[in-house]
Image 1 (cartoon, rainbow, N blue to C red):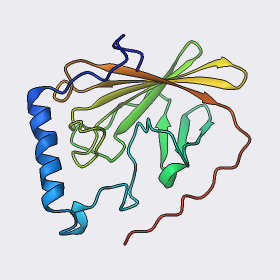
Image 2 (cartoon, rainbow, N blue to C red):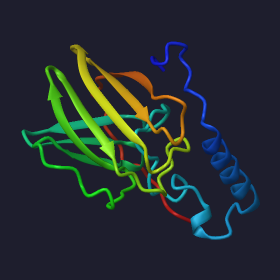
Image 3 (cartoon, rainbow, N blue to C red):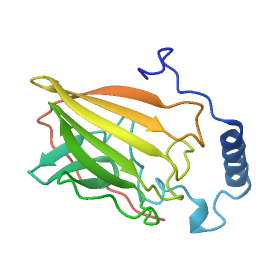
Length: 181
């Protein structure tokens, strides 16, 4: 976390803390009453975006042409196709697991903003009001700085930003083997 300067994710607002506590209590009481009680990751649907954790299957592959960029994540083989052509965002009633992203260039930085997350998405307890701005900047021959700014005034007391250096690799991206049940 590079912002706030103390390196910590800001605290939850009181209603978000209650929301999180209720979700934890529900999951403890109903670990698998139905398929809807099982987390999205375990059901092989998505790990969500932005994915800030590292570990196994943590590679990204980035493809680009003049009109789109594809941000492909090895984990759960999530692929985000992000328009760069200035088209308007989707209607706010259209909600998706990974939200609705739109991208543009600011000098040598590729920026994309994502809104319209589904209320069923689960990024660190954020609500459907989540707004994420991601920035990819080449800082060396083999390094991209990946900055992610998270805003959700119905969840955190202030926006926060994390930066992860992405190192180039010639390693293969493998199929993410996953199955439900």
